[in-house]
Each structure stands twice: as C-alpha cells, then as structure tokens.
Amino acid sequence: MGTPEFAVPTLGHLMASQYDLLAVVTQPDRPKGRGQKLTQTPIKKIASELGINILQPKSLRDSNFSQTLKNLDPDLLIVVAFSILPRKILRIPRLGSINLHPSLLPAYRGAAPIVWAIANGETQTGLTTFLLDSNVDSGKILLQNEVPIYPEETAGQLQARLSILGADLVIETMKRLENETLDPQPQSEAGVSYAPKLTKDDGRIDWTQSAETIHNRIRGFNPFPGAFTMYNNQSLRIHQTLCIETQYDVPGQIIEANPGGQLVVACGQNSLSLLELQPAGKNRMSSNAFLNGNSLSIGQVLH
Image (tube, rainbow, N blue to C red; front, top):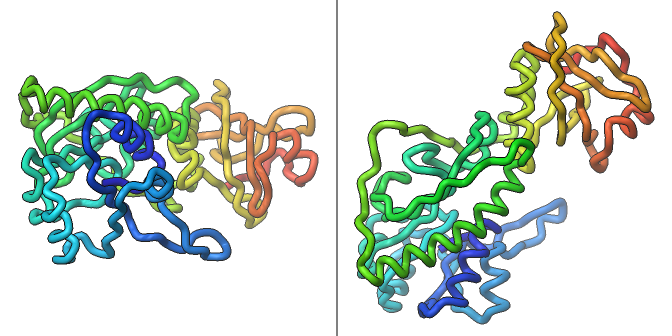
C-alpha cells in the first residue's frame, strides 16, 4: 500500500524478493498540473509496467474493497506513505500490517517527518518499521536504522536516500518476522514529537528568525511547499542560501545587492546570502542572474 515516489523502491524490492506480491493498493488517479490532466500515482505507474494487480479504492471504508482484500487472503500488509487504515482493514492480514516511517519513532510522528527534521535543524534522523494499530504512528517498533542528515541536504535529497534505505529495512523486517527473530517493542512515551502536514503558507519566510533557522527551513521546505518571500508585491522563492555572520538592525532588509556580487538579506540574527532564486512564473536562477534582470536596492525590505 503506497502512493508517492518514496514508496517506489519498496515496491521494487518486494518484486525482486522471494515473497508473493498479491496486489498493490494506491490512491485513485487525480487531476494534476495546469491542464488538470488525470494522472497516475508513481506507484500505479510502476505497478502497471510490472503487470501487478492494482486496487484504487475511493474509500478505504468501502465494503467491496475490504472484501476484495479478504479474498486475497494476505499474510501481511506493507504500508509506505499511504492513508490511515481503518480497523477492519488492519484485522485482515494474518501477521498484521507493517508501516515504514522515515523517522526514529516516537520522534516526528505524522505526515511530514523528513521536512520537519531538516527544518528544525536536526543532524540525524532514521527509519522505523512498526506494526500498525488504530492510532497514528504509535504501534510497536520492529526495526530502526539511524541515518545522518548532511549539512546542506534538502528534504527532497534526504527523501530519495531514505526511500532506498527504507526498502532494504522493509525486506529485512519481513525476513526476521518470517524467522521469528523479532520482538516488537512498545514505543516510549518520552521523546514523542510531531510532524504535521504542510501548507503553502508554512513556506513563507519570517526574517525575524535567525539566519540558521531560516536556512534550515529553506532546506526542509525544498521541494514542497517551497520557501518564499515577497518583493515588490511579487513572490520570490528561495532555493539555496548561505549563512553569514553579520548583524544588522532590520530583519528582511537587503544589505548587499550588486550584479556580479552577492544578494544578502539581514535576519533576526546574522544574515543570509541568497544563492539561488525563482521569481514567480520563471525558472530557477543564480542571484547574479536575478540581480541583472530585477531592480532591487540596498535598504529595501523583503516581507
């Protein structure tokens, strides 16, 4: 059971394993892009190419869907980046349902653990396989792997790494369950934190925060929802920055803006050099290219 790119490596590993994959469950096709063209999920696209049985229920509570699952008589459900499963679905597999979560539970329970780990300046995260129960990300832990977060790594880059490492962990979990060498452990009540779903507004930069905090949030919100600020009543997305140890009085104020040089903005503590930008409706560009085509002046304040 899965939908986005993060689940694709696990599907590939399952197909290459000794286990029989009975079906893939993914979200229905949805309109996407400017033309609102009906688009397959990444998991459906791969499953179709591999000739796997695909189920796309409009609702997980649909009785026809649950009956279809019962008829398949699965030993195990593997869940990666999917919806919360109702109790009647959790009761179907003989051995239960395994979820792959990209954090070291109980830290960062919720929809966006990779994003918030980077945005909060963490230097380490990890992967957890656990048994699903009726609550969100709270089931008994099966296996965990610690994974470092690289200093300039974005959420998109970390997600790509974790998706492959996570696929390995899922297969290892299945083998050890089969060999009865796993002892599921309840999650600790200490260290619980949450990673809520993101909205576009989460990406708006608050220049009163420190340069380091903003820098980490820009990394964490790349690619979604994207970190942005406003200049001349237009949106300006920020893709890459560099922290500079200089202090100025007005957060958001441009303190250097010279074509061929740097575009530097004051923060609540220290400053940021904006290295890669994207004005609304245009492609990503270097700060130098941006300054050559846009009128920004020292003293102007970004909001």
